[in-house]
Amino acid sequence: MPIDIVKAPKRHTLAPAKQRILETSNRLFYDEGIRAVGIDRLIAASTVTKATFYKHYGSKDRLIVEYVAYRHLLIAEELEELARTTDDPLELLRGIAEVQARYVTAPGFRGCPFLNAAAEYTEPAHPVRRAVQNHREWFHAILETLLRQIGHPLPGDAADDLMLARDGAMSGGYAGDSIAASAALTRMYQRTVEAALPRVAA
Image (cartoon, rainbow, N blue to C red; front, top):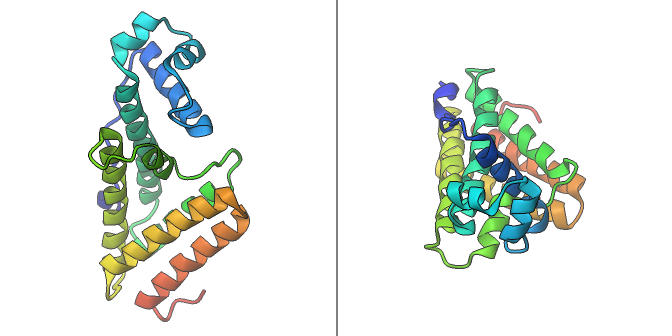
């Protein structure tokens, strides 16, 4: 059942100030870059005191990991909601393709938040990189499972292809023509599906 494949982490109710800091970091880190946004800027934009910031997060590094986890949560919740609408793995796979294509052309888009975070932290063992890797492994597992369910002969390889296509669309869509990148990503999903279901029309 597709709904069992896409399961979002449990959302915990945070103290208002802590939630405000997290949402502020989500906006500023994505819009301006993680290292470009200092603690004083986060504190001012979140309308909290320095003591409140350190009470809830302790350090900027901890907040950054929470930011990546929050981005994962938002995407997981969106895909879980999508999975609630269908029991058909093919339909869910196509729905995921549509969601990703919309990301690339959305107002304010500036690339993949996970790739952006990874680019700012070069040490593979850094907690930020591990959080990014956890997200990518989660998403790859979803793709591989759905591809296996629709009968793709090489679901793992095909999931790799879709991950790379997604990465390319996210990067190319920000640096270049977002509409072309979105369309190319959609075509890649369709070709991958056709490898499992030759009878499916484009």
